[in-house]
Image: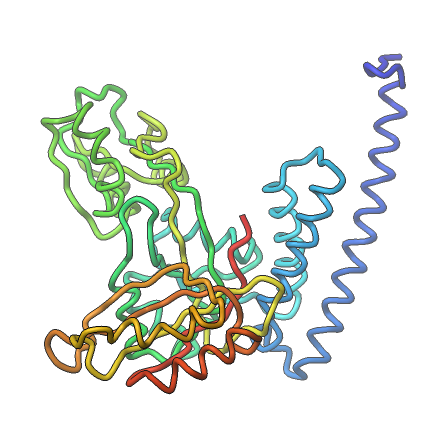
Length: 369
């Protein structure tokens, strides 16, 4: 009888694995029944969106991460988080699967962000623009939306920011996705490539590699990387830059993997919804603010002074045209903490008193890994 390296017969180990599997299955079923009771107690009609709580899911994932680190694995943190995410996703979908609008089509990085945040037991709704994602969530046709907001290499996605100037939607969560850009096409030789299609952000993230390895090849910006992959499938001599999933979806050869210029290339996505998340143990708040006269000396300093006075860490600030008059600006600001908890609550009350425009766009759990 075959034996393992530890001297225990393999058949005995397999029997133990079967026993553990049975226990896991029973516990998963018990968790699903408990989740079902939570849903029914919170909303008699069983509408999933009304009892979905991103702050609770963040808490569960952080507890799983802490246990894994304290117990020393052996599974990687990312794998543990993925397993628990899928369990929660399946349990939640017992009522009705959440409908998630995202910047499509199928095969985009935004779709990957949807699956990383919500798991696979949702109904993804690919849409053609950031504006359409906002509109579908506003109308209730989608429960939540996922849109890109910034890249660590190329900066802010301005049209996402600008949507918050007029939209009533709130930020419910955030996702950070490590971005690997891959060159793909129907051809097998790089010398057969006449043009490379990609989203402008992706082309920019690979600018150095393209200049070094394909300086004479045309670079064609398209609406999405998935659109570039579709063109690579249908057009002779066209290659695309996209995530590995697009190569599978569109039947392309993966010619050169990971051609992004920076090894830490990461994109941050926002989850948008119609409600504000409750406090969790690690939150971020996004503000939309403006001073009465943004062109006067010290206007921004006076506006932000309460944050410094109360020890609030500001992690990001972006200015955008206010659309009220020329050369007038609003500021999108990310700070640590939840707007309903101290010391941020007191700091925001003072900031609001100095602002001509003030809105909490969202308080939400920080991204986990």
